[in-house]
Image 1 (spheres, rainbow, N blue to C red):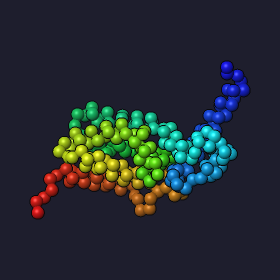
Image 2 (cartoon, rainbow, N blue to C red):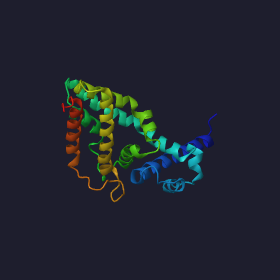
Image 3 (cartoon, rainbow, N blue to C red):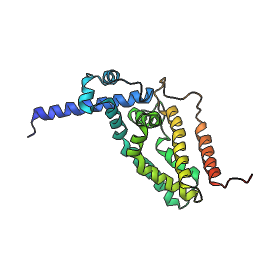
Image 4 (tube, rainbow, N blue to C red):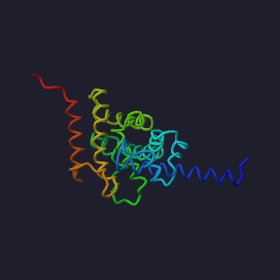
Length: 220
């Protein structure tokens, strides 16, 4: 039976979980998955370090929960972008790759939506995380398969393994662009040397590269 005391405890517990998730997102955004410690995350959340283990079991489980928390919003953004392409009836490789970028196009380091900006950087950091491939597959495998099918329609002669590899490499490079955009101003997130106009150039090179793989090898 619910009582005022149990409801109050539940609210405090939920608030602590949210604070830890927010702190984890912010620290992963600036420093990646390896550097944040139990103590530093709990300190950023304003709670005792023991509460991290109490609510999540381990730092790794907290990090996975951070990946999972906003995954539905990201998947919805990708599906909306792909649905818009399908209404056109035809599309090119560039269109599919641009659809992957669509949920992120408005992200800036001075954006007021700090929670979403930090989550975007969490996604960008997945490629270098110890469990990144597992977590990415767990929450984004279905949408990845949709992107590969759309690429296959644009490049019908391309081998399936090459198609999947091309999309995986494209995701990794787009992750660099996300790190440029989503880190806190003055933080350590942005890769050195990346410029705003590199994104459009990167997209063109990726698309041409995938078409090159599709083409038959020249005779020697």
